[in-house]
Length: 330
Length: 284
Image 1 (tube, rainbow over the protein chains, first blue to last red):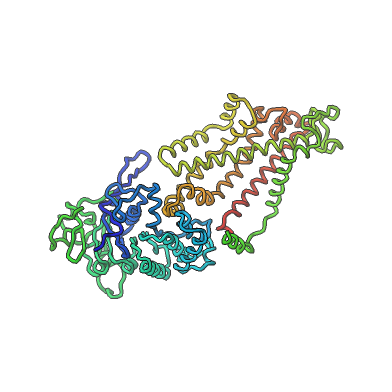
Image 2: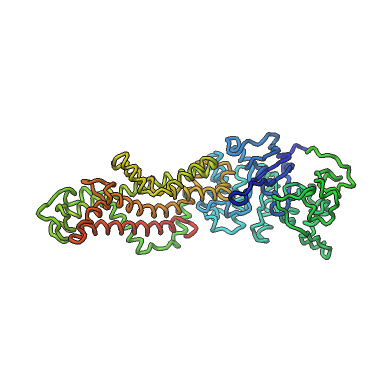
């Protein structure tokens, strides 16, 4: 196995919030000890419901925010501080695709100028080379030259997302973080954009972190998946294996909730209880109040993310019963 | 640039026509600017020249088309010079105020933390303090000169630009286009000047068209109190202030500058409103 492109080790991110004017500030652990690795030409899918810390993990991995604990290494080197010169230079190597393409584009500039902007910022090539590269990028994502002269509001949602992807690819990065890239799009357009991302990955050998709550899409693009619950990874493994035979009860519930023609008629697991609130994390396993199979140990002891046979990791006391309780290095 | 030109050309047929009121506004502003620039040539008399035999002459007098004041000074000549002074003060002050306020707002949005607290505190102080009192204090301490007066007027209303610029810059930076451009690797100058400023310019311009008439009125008020432009120099507010004593016997002394104030502020508001729509490509 080659060294991963990007490695995140035990990331922690705290936010402090204040309730009311004189309320006591409370800290929320948005991300709590997340470790992951992204390899060249491979996609890691990150799944979880709202508030599970997926997007924060994406921002930490890109170095847009500093973690409160843990470290992120790109090609074996720690990420520089946000805003510094080194950090700005590194932006050419790693890029982000946003959930809301209209928000991520400047409404007052034509698309072509915005796709070209990373080249201008990083001083790539001469003026004519940049123009040629811009046309090439627009063509690569399936936009015409005349669409490049339009303003963002004059394009459809799918075309805007293509423009955002073209801009992200302008400097030839080798890491792409896609934060819910298709959840704001129509289903028919989603497929186009997902296919585009898969094609571009094959073409440029990009390493991708694909963040989504849509299991269908994640399954389609990801080689590996990590499932997050309340700031922690609860299960991680090869995408097909995880979706075919979920080891963690939460993953099982997620999988059963997404419709699938082959599983028609099978019982769905309906989760009871409140949706997770990062400000009031339950003791023991964070999932135990909603877990259909929770045992007494789950209320007391928080399970560690331990390996299962077949290159999978899971954080669940019950799933680990058969496996040897090896203490993970984290 | 060719792309931009082509894009602009492409949308030309859909461009809306300029409404007549805006034509009036543009025409009036141009007339005022021409008057201000050509004041020396356009004024039939020196604005301080006495014609003691024709004191308080009615408008329509063969020698003085807008009449004369209590010392026989030509109202038209005085009006022309007043327009120059008042416009200079109002334009200068509005530009200074907008530039200062926007800069402070951007600094607050960029550095956050202590810088933001200080800027917001200054803005609150400015908003809480009646500006007239502040102006009186400064003029009392430092005396009165035209450059000082323009700079002082330039402090008027900066807190509004600062708040607008800060709020919009923060909103743009968090999850939006500015954040996207920043993560491309762009430096602060590019983010603020090339992306945020054009995007918030329409709001700032509308705010400027609100401040401009207010500065004219403030200048008029201070001059009326005898603290603004000092005689023998004249300004619109100055003319209104001194003409007040003759309002029953010779109302034209006061009505001429008052009309100019009303029409100029109206014209600026009309044009500003139209510019806001015009500058926004999403409304085309």
